[in-house]
Length: 357
Image (tube, rainbow, N blue to C red; front, top):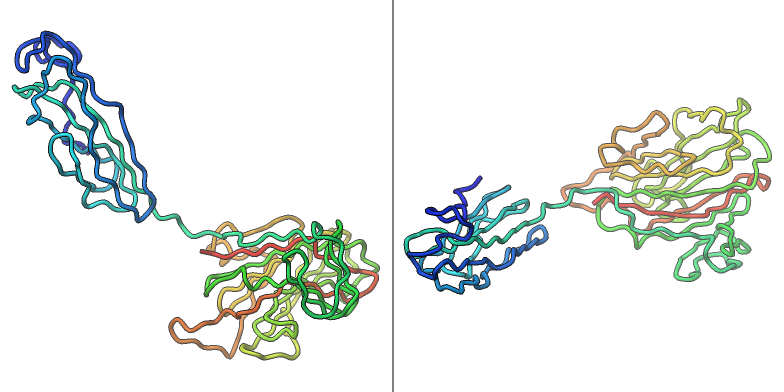
């Protein structure tokens, strides 16, 4: 809304810049305002006090006691107070406010001569979204033969069940049959925000069908798979589909033992020969959301995750309770792979971590 910016024209002749004579005198000299200015501040920021530069007034027509300030709000309720050329101070501003502060110079008879304009804006709070907190290309690491346990390769912490695994030099992280290899992603998550891991696994081949040739993408709290931990399990099926199941440790806080398996399977029809799959495992406090995809398939929002697609398993952690802000998310987070068969080995080429915040 506006309380009215007066036009800068002579009320007697209609000429731009006000009267050509009388009032403040000047014999027809034109008053020129300073160049427009603007300020944009971040959400939660404060608008600076505004002092206008001097008007160009060769005829001395401006009456310094007659400046008129006008606020025109595009949004919000910011108001400005001050006198003369300023400073003018903003009050009542909030995120999302925007508008203009105009200053009209007038002569002694209150005739408008010229108007200076200052635009202001205070940003709104950005909405929460899935933020990528790490993106690790394991093929770009130097070619390295790994030891059992934890080690650091070019700043990336890797954990292997057994020695002899390899990484880098154009190849992904290996995992021998019935052994697991992990990327430690603990430092890329904070607090209790929903978290998501994306594990790109590429197979050279599948040597057969069935669970004996399964590949698992893992999001574990430790190498023992203590709760809360979850994994994808997928393998070619005799129907020609890539069959997908989800497995998880259903108990919390140091529990281990046999994993629970989703109460069925989902078949990606006709995709049994596809060699590249992205394993997705999201953790939202007591629930896992688990799916695989042939292409990148990050949810667009938390609401998108919580309304899962037909190929997504939703898994629950039982026997758990927390009061108020008690911590749930584990301090350690490992993104890994486990291969069932030496003829159907997958390699992790890339790991991304995302956090909803």
